Image 1 (tube, helix red, strand yellow):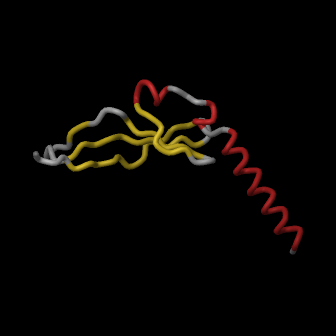
Image 2 (image 1 turned 180 degrees about the vertical axis):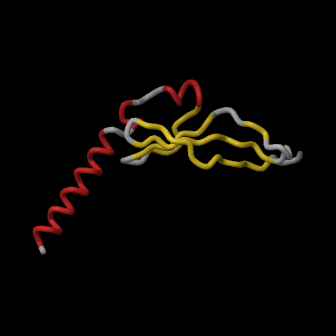
Length: 88
């Protein structure tokens, strides 16, 4: 039983280390920093990027920012951020 737990822990540590090494922000990819967006959160195994420009919702009540998560060397679009526009 002890050998199985040790093997599982070592495998888990190796997977986390591999994802940390291939984290997009570790290599400082400037694709999002300069053209499409900026780095918002950098975690050990993934990074979250947010689009600098926004689009307006159909009812003109929200600004919608596209967000991406970088895992390994790939980027995936996640749920956009909606910010309510205040009427001044």
